[in-house]
Image (cartoon, rainbow, N blue to C red; front, side, top):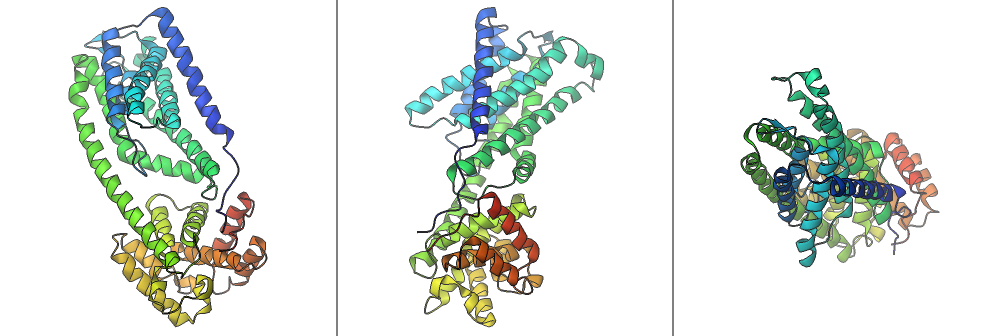
Length: 428
């Protein structure tokens, strides 16, 4: 069996994030217990809002960045709360953290009783980001510095919006760190560059992140005018957004599962070695990140890499090792076109089908995603043929840069493999 492209044990950054969140939570709980709860009515309202949002999440679907948007918005609103019905509040930053921690703990009890696991990393992120927002907002507001900077008029909302933008960036930094650590710990993919993951997280803020942030700010401003009843009205649209986003995510998950099942069909039928499609998809995604692909373009690359061999099912006899590079160019293009036709019927989208169709073209005529799939597929095939290890396989790819492989893609592959210790694909 081939070993996956894996890397090392769990990175210390996860322990650091969890430790910082735990320390902050203990300090906040101790301070609140000693000094007492300020504005207990408001604390109860926002605590219930956060707990209800956690309970309503029903577990995170694959690819869902924020499974509890209502809880996130409620926690942000409490962190950005300065007035209640025209009267200044005095709860402070540490009470905000304490209320969020207690609400998450209370929500975890029934979830645990139902067998739903608590995501410790996501909980730590919530504590740290909400703590960051509260520490940025509460001292400046209670000291009057925010009013001196922004005034007490139509420009004042710029203050919570600025804090919100900084908080979103803080959350993106933490999310990218934890995502990179998850790849390292799982050993299921090549370690991606941190900058690429951070760009992905920042771009993802344009989706549900905007709705969460806007709801948090509007709720805080609504409570400042109307009192503690405002969250019940203002958080309703976010629930509708959550339902719509959950359905969209479910459709995407189903589509991804369909493509993964089809990709395995070539392995089950004996046309490709076991795990070939999964390895090519993981390594191609890492190479795509190395070359600057993010967001939808990276998703297209991953799906095309999974499905790149589906056209081989049209062959009467399997090619040895699944390496179609030995076939005549016309036969390679025929297989690629048949594969693209199959992909178009899966709902994966025309972009994915176009990459699969053009993987056999000369690289100068290919889009970047097709060049990556072609090169990574050839690398996995060469490693499976025991040509002398990954260094020898890369050397052969470099010899083919005149016609078969783009030099920049081959060099990006070399850098990705070097970060992973040049882990060989192994024998099929």
